[in-house]
Figure 1 (tube, rainbow, N blue to C red):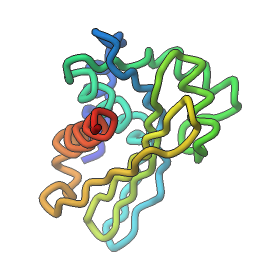
Figure 2 (cartoon, one colour):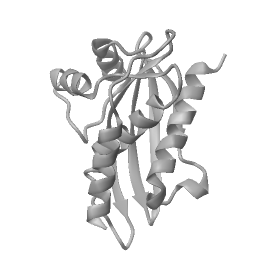
Figure 3 (cartoon, rainbow, N blue to C red):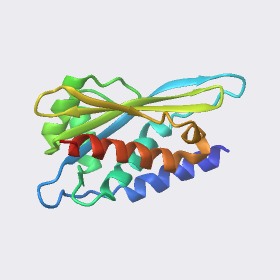
Figure 4 (cartoon, rainbow, N blue to C red):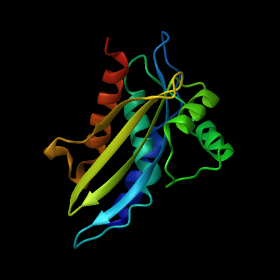
Length: 168
C-alpha cells in the first residue's frame, strides 16, 4: 500500500503545473497540509500526503476555467521565508502573507486525519487582502471518506473552494 501512496503523491505533483488566471479570475496559492494523524487499529503514516494533497487540489483547481494556481516553487520559497515547512500549522495571517508574496488572491491550507479508516480533509480558504478565513470546506460526504478515493476528494474540495470565491 505504501507504493500506491507515493505514486499518488508524485502523480498529483506532476499534474499541478503553474497557471495564471484568465480573464482576471481568482488565483490560489495552495500550501502544504498539516497531518493530524491516524487513529485506530490500522494506523498509517501519511507524511507524503502533506504535499500530495495540496498538489492534487492545485491540479483540480487549475482544471476550472478562469482559475489560476500560483507556482509551487514560489509558494515553497515564500513559506521558507516565513520559516515554515511541511507539517507545520499555518495561521490565516501567514497564509495571507504567502499569497501576497506569490501574487495570489487566496490561500488554501488545511489538515487531514484518518479516524478508524475514515479519511477526513479540512481546507481553509484565506483571503489575502483581508487575512480572514473566507470558508472552511471538508469531505463531509460519507462516499468521499475512503482514502482510495483521494482524487475524488481533492476534486470535491477544489469545487467547493471555487464555488466559495465565485458566490455572490
